[in-house]
Image (cartoon, rainbow, N blue to C red; front, side):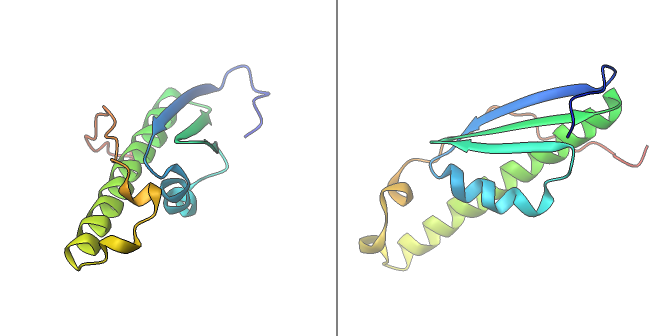
Length: 112
């Protein structure tokens, strides 16, 4: 991500999570060169730069969908672990309430 192209389009997505480091790590394999991701406490900041509006929309959509999936998987894993009786092994982050983000998770066809 260079930021040097005056014609490029950018978007910034900031979300908060009970365990932002874990969510960001789950998303890292899907990060592309057009993305810059950082974690600050309970927040994940993602800056996306693409040369076209359509490309930007597709990348943001993919990121948000992946973000929601990661949150749900982490939440289900915590529920499963608690149901199995591992309650005494929770960390502070495990016991924290997972915050849901207001996002539109409709799928966008990226093959156009």
